[in-house]
Amino acid sequence: MKKSDSLLYYISLSYLFCSVYVIANFPYSDLVLPYISFIQFFIFLCFVVVQLNLNNIFMYKPKFNYLNFLSVLLFLIFFVSVFIANGKVNFDAESIFKFLTYITCIYIFFVHFSRIIFSDDEKFYNFLKVIVYFAVADAIFAIFSKFTGFRYSTSFPSHSLGFFSHPNTHSFVFTISLPVLFFLYFDKKIRLSFFLISLFLLAYNLMTTYSRTGMIITAFAVLLVTFFYSKKVFFISVALILVSASIVVANINAVKTDSSLSRALLILAAIQMILESPFHFFWGYGIFEAIEVFKTEKVFLGSLEIVVDPHNLILLLGIQFGMLVPLISLVIYFYVIIKSFLSIKKLKKTENFKKIILALSLCLGLFLQNMFEDIIVYPEYFVMPIFLVFLGYLYCNIKLAEGLIHTQSSL
Image (cartoon, rainbow, N blue to C red; front, side, top):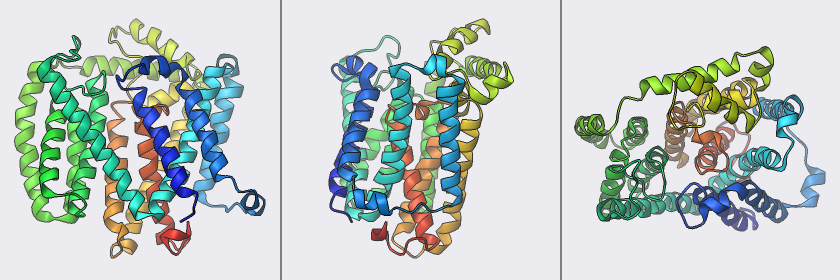
């Protein structure tokens, strides 16, 4: 464990705090939002200064492997799309810093923060507890707001919102925190009383977001975690989920209208944009220009839904940067996921086995949920950093399983 890693750990958490702050309804968050890319880039500079070691820079010898090759290729295509193919619409401070936010987010969370928590069990568990404590505080605030009328929302009068403005955003808090809660309890890091109280708070709030995708994906992630810990708890969880699902479905039908047609129109609008010409298929429309064009296109197709993107991570990346970016990103994602499943056999008798299952459940869950949402594509918000942390954690374990590193502390 490097001495600077403790400071880098807290700098990373400050970046993550900013990514939560700007999407939540915290005081002045709407005023901070236009400047979040600048703020996060400043935090990145602080990260680099702390990490900087000139001796390591001059002695560094890059190693060629499949993932490094794909990463460099992705960066080059990303760069060409933003600054060459769509340079006219992207050559402003906001677009440039948004581009840099993607790079800084990947660098901090996939490359380094994942390494830090991989190398230090205490920091790993502390990070998980931060996730659960925030979710519990958010859930308590949501219940308080709902039953007292504090911060009443005319758009979502019966939904759980917590610190956020939209129930679909709120559901991601529980997609992430509920599998973590089960993991911490099974690993004896929290007491049974805290687990049961937190489980009630988080599950109740998830169900009252009325996010069908969120509930299905969270159930999948929790079942994946419980299956490898306890078959008994797994079957109990299945029974409880089935009972809860029958109750929730009735409530959803009463509260929400069917959004299938409007979602289909959003997807169709994005596909039309991508297929408009070979140029747009390969290079997109630009970071912000794509959103403006999409808002016009969806209206022409008859979609009056108040959304600014297609609610699909592949299509959003496609209209912004062209289809090469999401395609290579998918190859990288599935490379890590498949290699992680293959590494499970080698690491089954190690302490890392259960942690790999947790990371897999979160990476699979967040990816699947963002096939129907796309908050993960926005690097300034909290979902992308958390997704990258656990994807990077899986990659660290792949290197351990393949003998590229011999111990966790050798990273």
